[in-house]
Length: 126
Image (tube, rainbow, N blue to C red; front, side, top):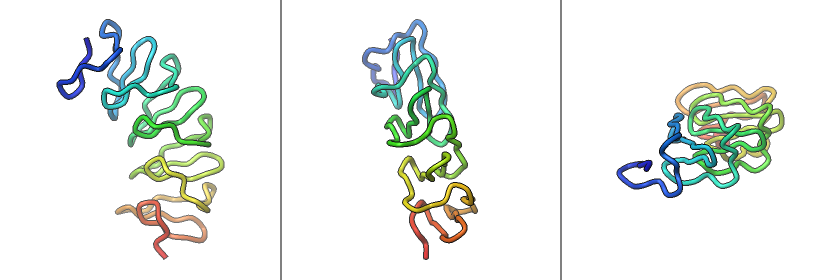
């Protein structure tokens, strides 16, 4: 049996359960976040990245939820909740509309910017 916060993780196989990082774990068949199965995630290829992000061959996840449209092969966790791929920038797994991944830089204290706009916790700060 596998437990998370003193609760049994339903369906997890304890004999080969691996604790990854940032709340992620997996067994032979499934991936879990905070003790809840991550729907659609491939256990064979899943990697916990950092800051709550993880990915498998086909999808990117934040805290166990699939990020629609995120590109696995180019996905890069920056820091402080920010991440980007070739086409988009994300904060806590949510796409930041209009942010340019090519010029995007994380500053400090929740701030970030691209060539045109400054952001605070993923929202326009202007």
